[in-house]
Image (cartoon, rainbow, N blue to C red; front, top):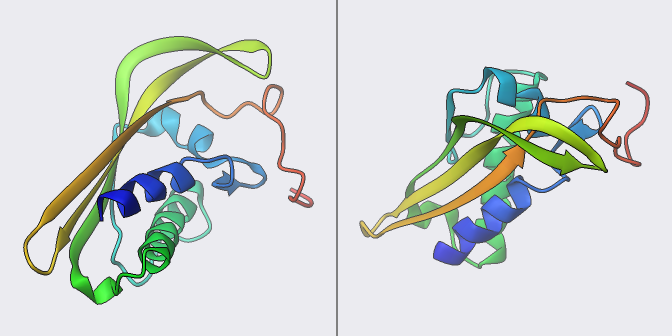
Length: 143
């Protein structure tokens, strides 16, 4: 399960997590104190918003990683994702331009049906969405 959580975080925070062709987390970081998602939820009801996509993508990507590891999802008693923005403003270079943003911590937790607990954490830089700096995904069509 430890490997599942690491792979989940890597996949979830990748460029492939997008919203309208841009990296998903840039749409969330400005209003992000902390988000919590139940990774075993059947669906999320927040709709086609950036927040809804973030929740749905987390549920889907977690299930994919559990499946790839050959584990039955039924062996996972609880699983959650916490996304928290650190308060200090940071400057980093994105596509050759210096941008202001935040370090964001992604923490994945799982409790197996036998009581064993696992966790993994990844911290990434996230700047607020800015179409003038970001590249749109080549696979995304009209806005």
